[in-house]
Length: 216
Image (cartoon, rainbow, N blue to C red; front, side, top):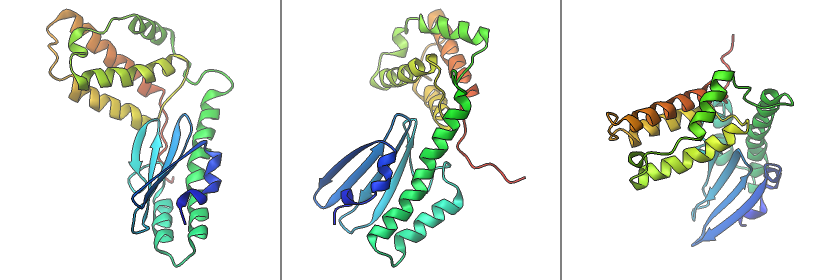
């Protein structure tokens, strides 16, 4: 039976989308910060992609799940159980991530803004928001794509939203790779590049981690 008839528990996450072609199926449940993508191959094998703040990782690589949860999913996938039971048990594990994100959001929010910036940080954010992007930072498809991606997150950050530490780390790494050919001897490039780096550091300061805490 098609997987769109299973995983009903994951509707709690948010919007459901389904796609099928040549015997392969893709089912996705998503909200603003979190998404679960479920894939079924023509051989009826299942795989899961976890997306948090736009960072997509296979369930076996994500640090949002602890080792026991990953091993439990792997065991369920090969267990001699009906597909219905497998899907329900795996759904409960994946739902725990959505609940974890919601709990973090509530604890950070505290009824106010998620990132209560210090005054100098507010000033830096305000200055950067009014800066014009130099041509050297927007003169190739890769650079334009990064600027567009970052601008979306920055806009949400200004409104008080925080993001996962993993996302910010990826943005910092990608920034270094994409803009390494920029001529920083040009004054406006140096100013913009340093401001961009500082803004990412501020975003990193107010990021949150989904990694399991180490036992004391």
